[in-house]
View (cartoon, protein in one colour):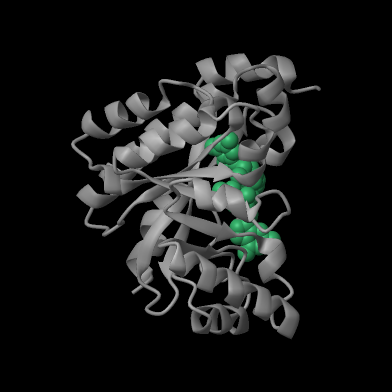
Length: 254
Ligand code: G
Ligand code: G
Ligand code: MN
Ligand code: NA
């Protein structure tokens, strides 16, 4: 991979940026949070999206370092935005398999939060369905339980892409699920809507919240709000953007 050998240097040179995609309450459209998404500001290639380099970073054993950098930068940006008067309730960060298999992850999260005088409710950790299935021991499950015990929400990302069994959901201390874009994009379509409704009902009875991802049209927004999804994220609301642009977006959002 052409970029493989450059990732370590790029970390040292601080070329990875923490972009933010807004999440709003489905009913009120008030700002509910944001997902932190990594972008590589490459010196010659410009902005490189994660699809291009995440696999290489994982192979190089550097994805955990990137995740931790996004956590740190995301929390810095949360503090800065609040100091600037933006009422951003929380941020969500992505945890790769390597990150979730770090036995010290709960302590690291707590340290990052308390060193900034933030609280556990300010952070959501997104974990992929596939991470949980692929882990052979129950280490990931125990780490998730310890994160939840600390009061930090753990959300199951890309839900509906075919990995998580219902027994996984019953065994984990998850605060919520994120319905994958592949479930949302067929809407309006009665069969897709039936599945979303059923998943919302199931999540509710397990005490979990539901984020609908990939909302691109007003019609999808209205339909998923009517089905009881708590939060929405997608290009209709806002694309991933730099903190400075997120600031401007948030000022205009209400
Ligand atoms: O932002 P974009 O839609 O291009 O992201 C593509 C994929 O990269 C998403 O599935 C997202 O989960 C993943 N991703 C984005 N940022 C991070 C990150 O900081 N850490 C990890 N592990 N994955 C990320
Ligand atoms: O971590 P996760 O796989 O959920 O990352 C979300 C990905 O989806 C990011 O790469 C983001 O850029 C992308 N994305 C977010 N909203 C939309 C949308 O409305 N439409 C499309 N096509 N992609 C989206
Ligand atoms: Mn995510
Ligand atoms: Na997702």
